[in-house]
Image (cartoon, rainbow, N blue to C red; front, side, top):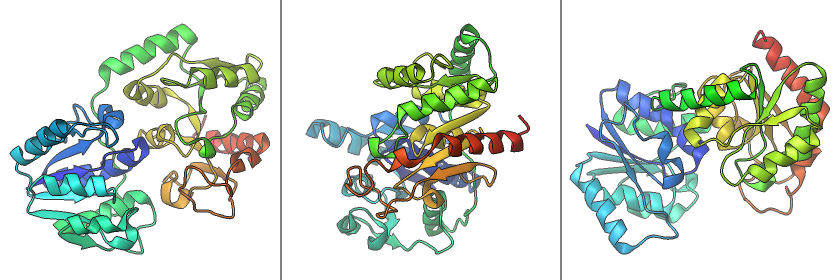
Length: 337
């Protein structure tokens, strides 16, 4: 059976949908995926996407011609089932536009835009046992008689070229034994202050730990602020693409990050993590290995998934460096580092 996965964004949400792709492949189905440009590199060249990956025109800037061409290509691939993992009007519209005879998505109460159920043909409840968003996604596969709750398999494309580039960059920076600090990658209200990351790097440097600061396009100033606050204890890495970041995270001894795409990618490739949470729910979005550590400040509005919220604004600044340092020590000890 040909199955279309509709998860258009964001980076972390695409990562959390990858186990559903693995489960479909294990069950013998041929999968395709439609995604918006920012997350496209995580799917291009994926060996489990027998029906390939299609680029969805960005929702806020596309032409009618682009939309028609994409819809025509979806129909050409003759999908039998379309699975809307996102719960929005735009995701439901692409699922319906595929021409699949079965258009499946979550029931009204589980969708960010409840009215979009009008475009579905099969609305599914989420089981109580599905606490983590990965399992919520996997529960949608029950429409295909696949019960894969608990699966934590993250198929990613082969990254030999990116690995070689990252290894060259790390060699130039002084080697491969490092803790990776990721200060960016998400809404501002979910991020730990750059000055705290710098203070953490100073403390780890005093213990002989080397810290690198990861950054991508548009984040150079943020990385520089962390390095400046570290008084030289941290080094800024080279700028990384999304695929290069995956290779970089694989090399790290441990990753410290907030609830962002880089955190979820580190979890996906099996790197030990210390996750910093505020308004969002770590039980739903956080690390899924028991050994990983979560440090959290819980605002009164939690769980809250609004980018702008007067209640949880500034809550991440309440996480102290000593707490994060203790979590780093505990996680490294469990990792045998």
